[in-house]
Image 1 (tube, each protein chain N blue to C red):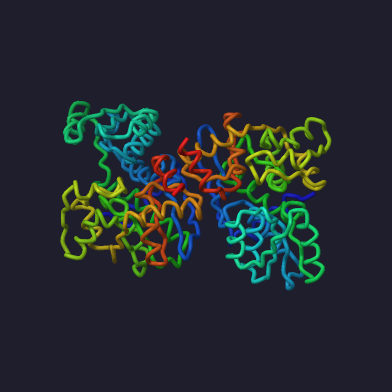
Image 2: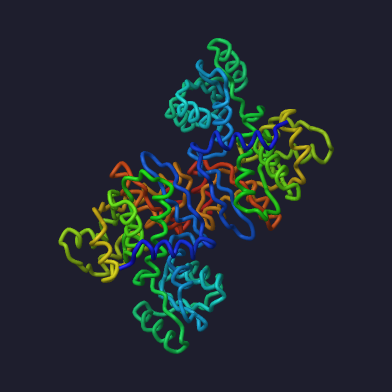
Length: 301
Length: 301
């Protein structure tokens, strides 16, 4: 498991390259707007830390992702002058494929079942290093820098609300927050349609949901499930889970536009929806890469 | 005219109550997202400074505005426990009237030609103090704190792009920036349909456009004109003006959603549109209180 000093070290490494996002007052709580990072998501923090700490990166890095991790790794690699290959499933929206290419990455589009295999083949062929989306201590430590910043900016914080999927974000944030301030409540937020971690915490053991079941939520970045590594952090640190409906996610997205002037993707609004139900807390707005047509429909409704 | 020390003093006064907005990388330039302030606009800075510096505020404050200044004064007054009366013209969207009332202000809705008279009558009746939207040194000094922050966060800044209307924002920002760094170019941004300051600077004297002519731009917060006080700052400090078309304003709004995950009102996107034409610069995103239906139409197009 990672420690506070891993997170502090990550903060030093990534500081020159990430936005120091402010806390924004919102209702009776606060927002931590990670959608304002250069690639539009917190993922940049973990990718930057992982890449910076690679011992041998001359042969480049490989990642598989259809989402924000793809652009985060491409961005971090370009920054460090390292070649990046991103394997994306063939159901990835073309706009995301183009955005990843525009960051200088070599993109391989493959059938969804082949993506891990292809990534591993690329690692073997090229001697490149794989940067996983969440199942790595350096990635988790990078995401944890968000927790450091929250405690620094709001010393009397009471509740922190963090979206959960693979669990990298909440593992890092919870480690930082609980190490500094054990009295702060760390609450995970999940779509009710992908609430496998809520069920796991209720049962006291990691429960796996069918991927097709988890895929039903509009929150497309929250359809993953924890690894053993992230589960060990979650089961140790997370106090509670709040699940939210699809309607509550949509309402949080329009609330963010109207009241915070922020664009969030569905997954990025899940913690905001959960904090609204709690009536308090710092909600991490994890990402803002939404299909403009979806946002237009929600705003017109 | 105000000085750098007025701006520094304002920064100390308002710091506890405003968001320290970060600079966000955007294309080849940067954004200063003042739409993230609690009332959704930079206006909070000037209103807070003016109210804090009032010697006799026990009888409350009065402002006339249909826009962001109304909510800024209401917010600042509530914060200081001072009664606020806001006079709004009867063509103000009901949602803005409600938002101002929700901040605890007493709102008087009057015919557009009566608003100044009514505000002055309220000042006389109640012994309250008028907080003008831009024509006051304390208001200008408050807005100038944005300039201090830009130079602090980006010491090698080359160009700062600021929207112009009554001129309070650019007067303050230019005073701060030019006092600290005379080599930085301060560029004003105006809608081509309300480019009275561009014409004034070209002629070397303050030119007044018919208000009905200025009202044609979609940038409804940029339909005002400078006072003698703001003109004296503008004519001294502003290096250049870039005017933008209505289409360029709309395109900047959708670019901000897609590439910066920020919601800007039309006026708030004018400096972004101008910076895009320059190909560089820190653009001040001045406000984000947009009609959601307009944003939906632009995103769906």
